Length: 188
Image: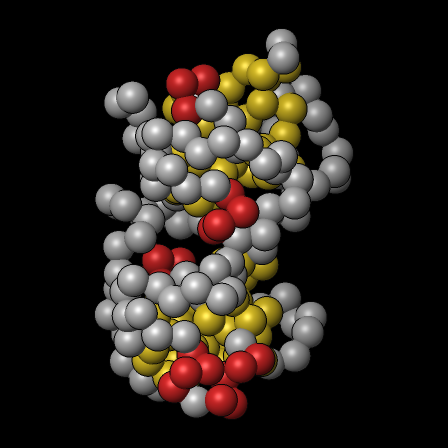
């Protein structure tokens, strides 16, 4: 399968005779299931696929109004690139396009301000702890047992990651500790 889409890429496909369009939220490696990557309750469980797949935030091409987008796990063979959206994906922040694999590790320093998008919500914060590969935050310090993770809550990551003291940029909620995906972090 030679289709490769980056996080943030606009895509369209037809399923059950209905055209849908949206953007790539996450890139999954061959054999990975959406449930392993994060909490996507609107995606039905299925068998792992032997090629790279994508979680897409999308709406039907004919939908209008303020109904939120839904997460889909479409067949990669059905996806086509799209120039621009004809529907309003209300309530969804499109991720910044990334070059290469989504899992490319970035290097940040302790105390560095960062930003990321998680669960469609932009967040900002400061790196408070660097977590070595293969380690969970609470193994470094029990104070990090309450860290909010964007997927893989109980599994160590195979790359260096970061504990961030952050907040939602929309003013809702309060400051708390997060353990976001390294690939989603950007310098603020």
